[in-house]
Image (cartoon, rainbow, N blue to C red):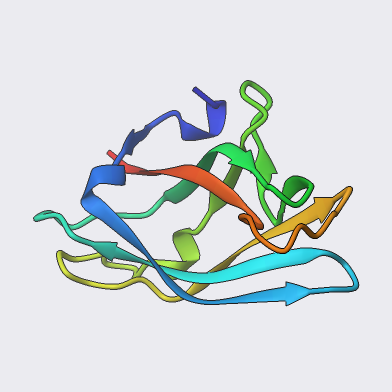
Length: 127
């Protein structure tokens, strides 16, 4: 586990990630997704909120998360999205403020099909 996740617990099962829109900057080969977290659990979840990408890949090239810290232990990108969470926590059924997850794809080759970026995510919150 990454040192930045110490003191946090995995709350992935209590949250849903809702995609609000995507964008592609052709000049920089940057794909971005505007997303929100939804608390589908029964407890208030308090910040810190960190999203860890697992098995980041692209069928169009080599993806790299931008605006994210990179775990020294696992080389996985970690976004701190705490600012998207209300000060009193994310209540059951509540939705976070929107935030952006962005990726630059190097060695880009357009195939006509395939995922620009895919990954599994885990969300960690304060205990």
